[in-house]
Amino acid sequence: MPLLEISQLTKSYARPGGGRHRVLDVAAFTLAAGGQIALRGESGSGKTTFLHLIAGILAADGGSIRLDGDNLVTLGEAARDRRRAETIGYIFQTFNLLQGHTVLENVELGMAFGRGVDRARAAALLRRVGLGDKHRHYPAQLSTGQQQRVAVARALANEPRLVLADEPTGNLDRRNAREALALIREACHESGAALLLVSHDERVLASFEHMQDFMTLNRALAAPAS
Amino acid sequence: MILNLIYRSLRQHLLSTVVTAGSIALASGLLLTVWVVKTQTSAVFAGTNSGFDAVLGARGSRLQLVLNAIFHLEASPGNITAADYEMIRRHPAVKAAIPLAVGDNFRGWRIVGTVEQLFTDIAYAPGRHYAVVPGGRLFRLGKLEAVAGSYAAARLGWTTGTTFRPYHGIAFDPNGEQHEEVYTVVGVLEPTNTPADRVIWIPLEGVQTMKGHNPLAATELSAVLIQLRAPTAGLMLNNQLNAAGGRLTFAYPIGTIVAELFNKVAWLDQVLTLIAWLVAVVAAGSVLVSIYNSMSARQRDLAILRALGARRRTVFGAVVGEAAVIGLLGSVAGFAVFVVLGGAVAAIIRGQTGVVLEPLRWNPVFGWGPAVFTGLCVLGGIVPALKAYRVPVAETIAPVS
Image (cartoon, rainbow over all chains, first blue to last red; front, side, top):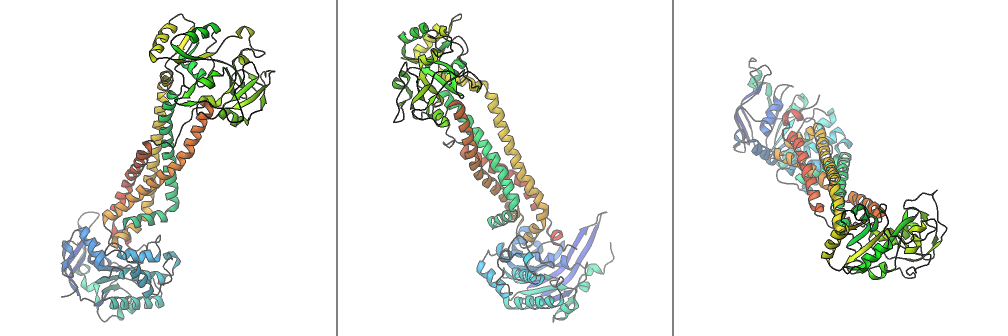
């Protein structure tokens, strides 16, 4: 059975002048446990909304999102929050580190709302991403590439079954982007987490064996505006 | 986890936390001071009688008579004659009668003429008698000798052997008349924590016969302090001596008369209490404003926490908890403010009246005061907590272009 199985997933937003605007309409999507897939999508294609729905940050209007057999669409907000805390890691495009927390504390936040804080594991993750000596640093004291590595460590902190990465290399130069991508893929592979990465960077997309075009996946983009 | 979030938020906004907690501390300290002073002063003043039941003096206000004779404040309402003194001294209902004469001072410290029996025969409080610090003694009648109250002696820097010339009048005027007589301090009283500590005591005739005083009043007295054999005697003497048309005032019972003073100024007490509570509410409001204003800047952080799996009630609880901790920190610091403020107020009251307050003696406000302040701060934290509760996660964590 796939780890992630999506069927007839839809999401709409209210228009200011009335009516609703459908931004997402995905007929089917699957991801195997431990698998890694990239989605090509331009800005405004709804890929972030797609990731947010899978993470449970947004509620879908219809369809199903089965993660490890549980349909997230039928869960209430609190249950989705708990599921996200326990089984999903998220790497944001702009890292979204908490500036007032140290590097170690940021990683701990990745596990705090799920299985609970394990300081030793957080420290080990920082060593894994090459930041073992930066525990007490604050994000503002790190380079962009280092901040991205903290975000990777945080996404893996709760031993996720699925890691979602939204343009993880979007803010990095070429060298850092290459290193970050390699780190994300290796770390997910080592931990057994599946990886769903969205990007518009062809160099990133080209490195994946499995790649889908989100522009084709999201039928809402082809439909006429209602 | 919530405690961790609270701690880190307070740490991240340290200046705001310190300033807000500081305002709570000032408000809390003010409330504690007002409450403690309010509850203690009326009780202590009403309980201060220096061991006497009543005061006899010239016709006038009973309160003025008590303030003058017991607390050594105010001017005497007038003089009474030696015959009046003898009348009351010999009365079968009177156990002891101690004459007083006032009219002079030394640099604002009141000089009171009396007899040595005040110090040898009278217990100023149950089981407590006057005593002279070792190395000194009581004055002798007919001599230019003085015994200083402990507080007055300390403030004047006096010891046994110090000499001084009294100033005329009960209020100090550096350009006023200074008497020729030179008195010698022969003893300093041990502290009594009563108004007697603020007085310079000399023999009765010293005041009466001081050069420059009216020689016709050489046998007159300002007041007589009275101990009764039985409380019922007070009522009888009250009816007898306070009759309309009489020349005398019999102030009895002393505690009730002093309590009337506090009843008269009860409105002041209520105003002070109201002000203290207003300050408390304003301080709690500052918690609301401080945290609420920070919510805009913290929206992204809160949305990130929610995106990491924190539930709405977690972020709500973290913000309310933050307000509670600020209230608690402020309340604890408020005790330090109270110790300073209460100590200063007690020192002023002691300096002005000789009455000693004990600000640190247990008062129920030490329990409910901090609880109320913390509760007010929690209330102040609810509005910003609601804002945090409603943070739209997806929109807020979207990349800022």
